[in-house]
Length: 147
Image (spheres, rainbow, N blue to C red):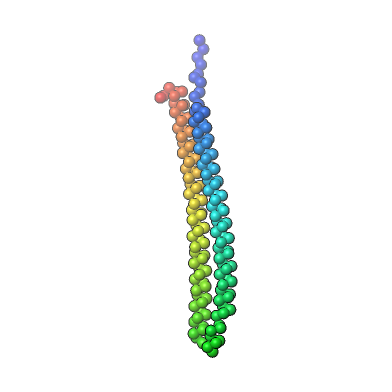
């Protein structure tokens, strides 16, 4: 009677499908998170642009009307007006810096969300690969009669 090698064991189709579905789900979740972050970043950039344009318009209006009270009181060339002008420009600069900081924080949050989604995807894919390798090693050991 001829000696035949045992038929190689393979993971069952349910295990294979589970690994494939896990990989698909991880990639899909990452893609959705990426799309959401890109959309939200675009929205934040649009809002930031609108805020800056509106602030520029408001600053111009403020500057146009700034001298009127000083002219009416006859102190157009005074240090009081000069200090008021300096204060107005400083406030405008502070407002811009605050908008800029808020925008940078918002964008940083979306970048962090993106990095965490990428990390989650990579961890899931790695874990699934490890599960598959461990199962295949277990089956190979059974074939060799080790287990």
